[in-house]
Image: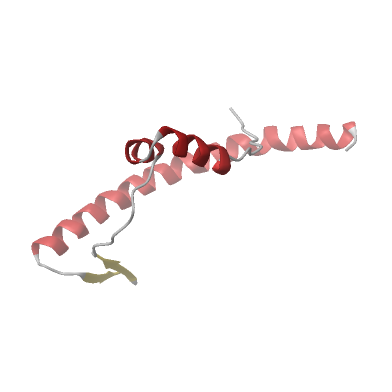
Length: 101
């Protein structure tokens, strides 16, 4: 990568960043309004014992799903320390992360 490419990318980023922030702020407000509507839909469905409802072409469904909860605390609770240490060693991965703060 050349210095010129880096400078062009930097300028593009400086130009685009404020525009993106403005759009994200607008989107955040719209998502809040959408969430309010969804909470009303869910209450309505529960009150009227509906498992499925369609609004504006979107199908809303209430269903129970099973899932297995697993975290290191639960593993440590149910297995001996040597097994936990071995499990952690065998299942630990290193991942490169690029962040922007």
